[in-house]
Image (tube, rainbow, N blue to C red):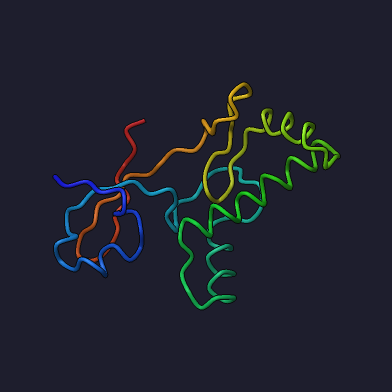
Length: 134
């Protein structure tokens, strides 16, 4: 078994061709993976909108950036303020899902503890999301 951090990138198989088959790796986000009770639009809406605007399929960087805006908007809404300290305190209380997955941070450290990384495997030039064991 070969595992590679870069395996989650959409161009991984295009660059490596057939030798990418069977390679495992982490992925922060994959199109079509839905989450319950999301704030903001779902993954399908985001993909459609992104493709209409850019002509490309979004990658995890685009999805994560969009989700950051959703979480910030939620924090502003709940805090009714743009004050950094109030937003930070509010962010430590937010526990929600976006199209990117779960957002939840540790109140003390500020570390993201809600988001779960996906595990993918390449097969025939396609990424396959493997079932979670948690």
